[in-house]
Length: 117
Image (spheres, rainbow, N blue to C red):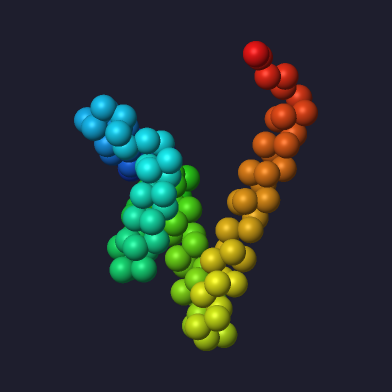
């Protein structure tokens, strides 16, 4: 399972790095972030991302495409339960734990480490 996660997650990261390298950094990390999250949403909505998650586990859920998958699945699930307005609530509810953890750990890191400069 570890090898599968490494190969899938590494392949996703390799694609992002190649996009930046082959365009002489005209594709910025910001473009990669938005593009990968959007790609994850689209691939998930089409039903192709969940089999990748089942195969590679964290190798598919940790990269940015996995965040897009999480948003899409939350939106789809809540829309099934509560209707079209659930799309907005579901995406945010599904990702709330991860976003909260990122903010809290980022804040704690800012308290512990002093910036150079």
